[in-house]
Length: 597
Image (cartoon, rainbow, N blue to C red; front, side, top):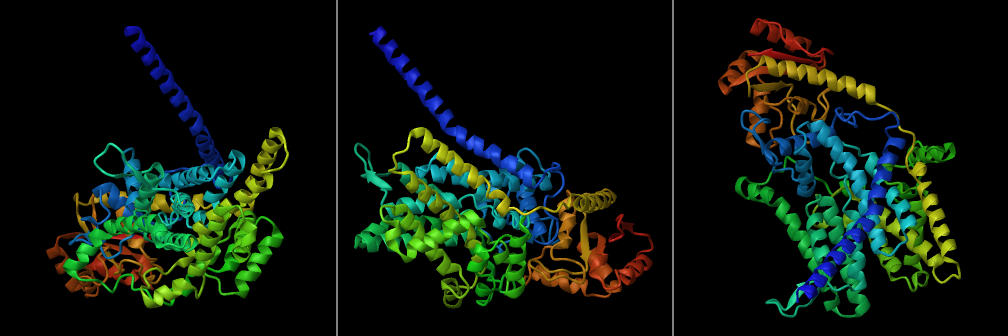
């Protein structure tokens, strides 16, 4: 008996070791593609290296808006509130939600190792490239695509203009690493993969299959990865449900897709729950993100943008073509970020051809499904398409339909891989010839990177100078004031999405919050709320009336950004100097001034 038990234990150990080695072998391609992605980053974007203590993107405009989210999350563990903005009341973000809890979870994980907000933003942004390549490789391998072509194509996906042109200004919208997994779920559901199965010997009659569990997890994550990608995924899953029910001629066939849509919507609503609850308690706020249905066309997708070369292409003829098109047509920001590159365009045109003539996809159900999804994406997002209909009839809150580009790109890349695989299947080639062919295809696809990425201009020195100037000033300001002191900021600038005040850019007042540790700032009161009205009225007072009001409210200093005034703040600074009787603290570039109260 003991000998038999010994043999059983030995077999279990061997099986465990076998599974361990198999798992290690299976992870090697993903580790390799991650390292290749990092290598491409340094090759194309940071040939001279990168100092992660300084922003990768210019820290203005939407960069500062994203930095507020990251800073809130690192300091309070929550996006929604912080006492360090909108002083003396405190910051409340409920009127401008983004349903980005999964991204913020990654931010919190990075924050366990560092509290430097700029470093955290940089690490999250660079991690996005790696996650995109890994998830796209996983999706392609699940489609049974050979390793070399799949690896090459998965390296193209992270380097779409829609990602690197957004940079850190659209930190979370540019993080579309869940899109390949969403495509995989759509292909499974279209193929009729079971997501539940009968369960024997348990209390419940049914249980989730392995793919069913994966589907539920991805739908939950999509609902936590931003409103736009959740909306697009839900719309395309509805297309899958409709397609399956028509193909099988029974509505029950659409149930798995309907369940996936329901899970995604519930996850999205759970992310938006704090905002919904706050609106029920305090009423809605029409002063924030009040969208017009016209914006669905203004920020819609143009097929021209998908097929045109990238701006400032490495080939002079392609760069000239791009400039001619952009100057001759109404060109939106979404169109600038939309190019698929030569390889992606071939895949996109292949899908259009299959959608127009179905016999081309005969025997390739996945290609047929991708053609349907691609056509649905174009019809939804194109200027004057169903997205515009949705904006006019249901809600204009979804406006930037060009942001569907990552879905179209992954469909196009996957289609081209399927076509390549079909070309080899059934041919009387030796294994060596087939592997050599796949290797050559992988190298050819890698050659698409220079086509997607134009020469990059270095802004490192300008960014470093700006950040060092700001850091030094706000540190000096913080050391000269009591801990937790409140600072009133002039001129008044509303939040969010405020227009520029003279040369004071949108969100420029957030720099004090970004570079300080305990000071409280008046900027950040949500437009349309009582806190914002108080700040606006106070900033509009004459200085002789304003100073007593600020002292009674507990403010210890007044901060002036000279860029917000036509006379570069000469009048208000001289008046404050005369009223307060002391010289202010000034930044090295003389732009920022701090007066103690």
